[in-house]
Image 1 (cartoon, rainbow over the protein chains, first blue to last red):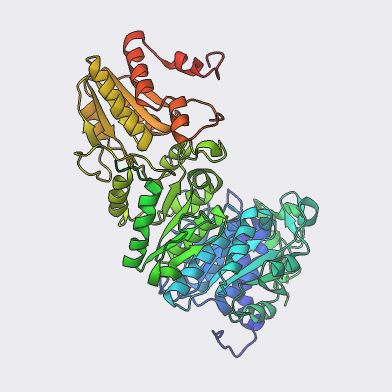
Image 2: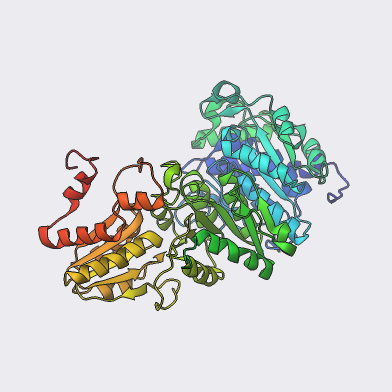
Length: 285
Length: 330
């Protein structure tokens, strides 16, 4: 399955999308309810690469049986997904302003009422099994669709992830691709201090997956790594994306406290200035 | 004499291969239950998927299959469906109203001497509180076949509660069960018995027979569909009765008794006696029949509890003291 060809590199072609997605995210975090800032900012290039360079999805035909299916297993990154869906044409960007407020369909974890959201997520450790089900359905039907699942790294502490990791490898689901947003942090600290995940690539390999690693804010590298499936016939694929929590905002990048934020007017202005200046990492490539 | 006893799970298994052969949109998801050993799925063999001992993954995979256009039948023990995989059932299946069929064997006390790790005395409470879920408890093999057939077209999820070892057929003569409607097995103006599952329905029928000898005329409803509950039938058959008695192989909290009590509390003044397993883990050792008897799910016990309730007032305290697990009132 080929990637859409562009005259430009992915980085050059999609950087504008990534920048606007970041602007949407900080705006949503400035609403009355706040938002999951850090883990959404770490996702931006992963989602940009997927939605603009990899996924075969069409906002005009969201139920196309031959489409690729995307699941944000780390559902708390919903605002990054909403921003990406808006940027990709599934949603009117004006709708983002209502995030978390009465009457909106945009809640802090994705729901199917939102165009482009396949299944709701939020409780961690569910997405991989769902993706495996979609992948198996496509295979039983002889359809070309692939399932892409993005997980957080802290999420990998859920045992159900490894149930599904084993299961997908046993079923030889080589139309299933998982991406780990490896920002290294969870609510209470570094993943390696809370409940260590390393050696992570080796762990996935020993579970029967084809594993690649990429700098998680480098659009060219991400599109290149994700590009086509299967990576290895008969094996599901896993990309470890090395990211920074809060990427793009120097005052929270890499900080544990970036997990959830309600930005004040002053902080929002500061965040926008930082994004405009490009001083906070993320999207730097 | 021919042994007419047949396990509901065997009746189910023997029918599901045919369902898979008939409908190319169905998938059999197994969790190493062993239920399908020796079953020939023929041309549908690629739609039999054994995911291993991994119930959460099985439920999530089934949800993905259903969202991808298939109707999966997931197989595990009742307690693993209702407890270990409960969150996947809630979020991935019920929340999305997906047509996943959960066929749960070893329900109630049917795992016998396997003990409390394998008993399922909470599953009806868990499943019936989930929006979108249909909850069905066949009382015999023929009822299993009839109800399975009627659930095939359900647009949403199904919890089908099955047993383990052979149980007797219901007496001949009753009309076949209809999904969503109580099956009237006996009518009587004094007391109404409402039961689900093989042992409880037989206990209710036997108790009604014993009570008749005392001049107490009891009706019996086989409430095979626990959700949605057939409230109109419940109201019609409980009107004017001195007592409504529920019998189930479930903890007394939250199951059929809970459902019936909830419905009747909202509609009229009738006493409800809920019979089932008391607030205790079934730690005694014995086979299914022995455990059911020990916890009062047999004709003589049920009849005795009804006689007692009709003559001496509220039975709750006596009942909780019965097995010595409660030393004081709550």
